[in-house]
Image (tube, rainbow, N blue to C red; front, side, top):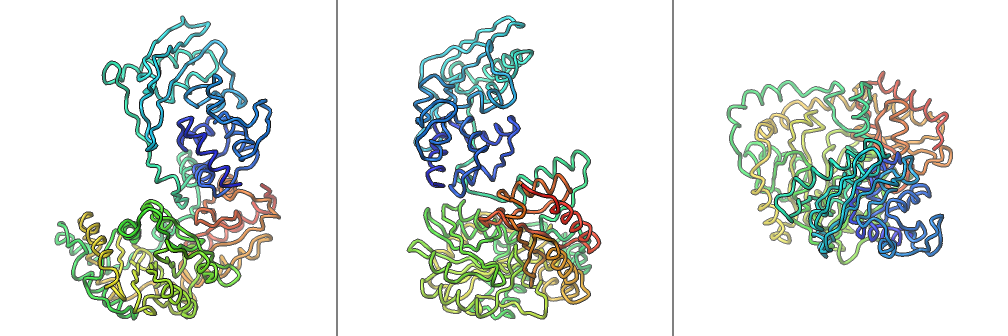
Length: 602
């Protein structure tokens, strides 16, 4: 059903020449709650909307809800499940942005009777780009009882260039709005480069259709709007230590300030010798095999390097196994590079460890790599050696690369030890990522790295690709590189935070116990990092939409969290909390959450 719906939804959008953002804007104008992430999930076939959202989409696209769902039938419109094109030929707005799409019919605004605007939209080429319409010239007329009628005759090319805003303006009640519509038409046509030549319109790449990053997504946008309106919002959505009083070690700040005048120019593409030497030695202490200084690359945070690695590796259709839940940048970068992110399940009942059987079942002849996030974001899980060994065995059996995101490897609690998976795989090709953003509380400095290890002979061509992209971006932040040696070699102040009595340790214990004390909430105790991923009783709270839950909590209690779906978790039953605030702040937040859930029903 999901695939049928997604296919019909995309078809209807293409026929009406609508992008996802057009649907979102139509929803905003109609007062319908529909975010970018929702539309993206509908288009990709990950989920089917609820009935009221389905009816809204059908109105916007001027098709039958039953047709969208892939079945025949009639609706209140009286149309059988006809294709969108058939209905367009019957006289509907050729632009595909009908009156319902912008809040006219059925959404609280008055339908136009004497004021009409015809907008002829260009056709879309086989490549998906908009091309000028080839139809003969049409007439565009704007009239009103209170305003002298104005007739504008535009060529088909000129009408193609008239922006969607003209249709919006025309779809308002007939008072002064018709003058606005006339103004829009006049300004659009006067902006033509020359007679008969349309203004070019620019659209985002379709490669972004399957990209989500809700850590800074629609709910965060709403929080920003609330802050601009003067409201205080407690941000528990992002792992940014500085706002919560975690300071950079003094010696790191001092050493950077002393070297600023020496770091004004570019460094080598891979990074400063001193930085890479320190990283190489750190990798050796982690027992990562076969690492030389040329195998070390610095980056503007790990994020840049993840993007670089996926771009250098993937061809269209290549598959990469990624955990669910994941840090969403991994999925985004795979999709942007033309690959396919295939999510293997991490099992909440088993300390959030990867489900090896599920991982094995999802390997195909297109699978090229396994991604591991250890310690894990968003769950805070730490994988023991026996689990890592099973993953190595699977990668060895199927000749797969291993990418291991270990940015939290120095934030491990309870006397446990982090083990790099690359240390167990000397015969495989591995790429290990880490950095200083979290362990040294310098997220804003943007300094991360990756280390190539193991059997590099089987990846020579890929390494050439990495080097090419590394050279193209010139180098990473040189002042930040200058303090890597100091940070890795000096006193590790983070160790004071992760033992009993330390801030992160005590805040972890508090948030774990406090969340589990709320009726309808359970959580697995994190072993590392500073995140917890609690589960909601969806039956108790009647939750079917985790983004709506996050919005409702934000509006009611001014608390910003990240929904589970933002981490490619496909049930609406989880959310992530960052427990960096001090305990007194966490107590206030948990109290508000408990009060909110005591009466909440979606």
